[in-house]
Image (cartoon, rainbow, N blue to C red; front, side, top):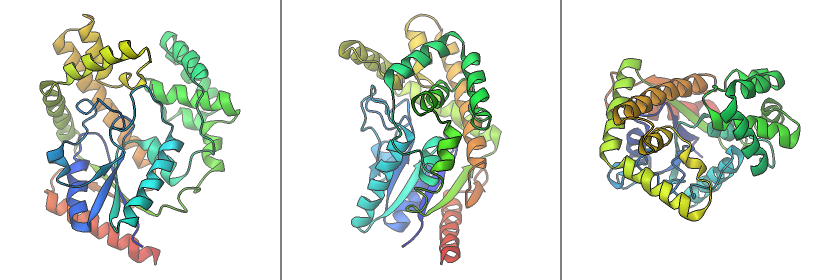
Length: 314
């Protein structure tokens, strides 16, 4: 049995096109590793691959959740394991592709059993965050300094989730990771390739992609989601994401179009840096700087790494 290939890296680096090229070589199907592409009605703002970009390759775990439905990293990991078995049962090769660091950690190190959520606790913590995010970060650092170091103060979802875990279970995220270390890794043998790119080139790609997304109807997508949220009476937690927040501010007259676009680009660049920092702390098989490589060269490097990982594991 081949190791399962995981292609990870920052947003806009070009993971999808590479994964599709690899899937064509290996008779594969792609499983998403993205905390926002899982939601329905958010295809533009989360850069879900279009039919053309999918290149005829089947993609899984994209656009299947309602924007009001939370999903934990532990729940996601179970879905991935199920999809891996399903794909293999069809004699296809599963390829995991995306940039969600916490989801990746759930696959490789495990998330505590019964990774549950408590909406009342979360809502209370979110209100505290909105009033004083610094206080919540200081609280996390005081109870879990190791995890607190890698959670950015602007990452509301992760900061609130970490404290929610602590309040529900009495254990810190780091304690849960330690308890469950290698729990899932024993069943998913991964060969992980981290794709990186020259910062200047990646920044330009982020800017270009943001402009393309806005030109493709991102603002109308947000309008529709806000309308559906009002109609449903449910909180669309997925709307609290980069770009969606800024577009809502623009629609509410709190931000000009140019300022909105600038804020989206800045925050996306900041997010890409955090993604790289996260994955550099994970155990990956190979890091590939794709700045000066064409698709064929990148594909060959990844296939070589997969073959090498097979040799080592046997």
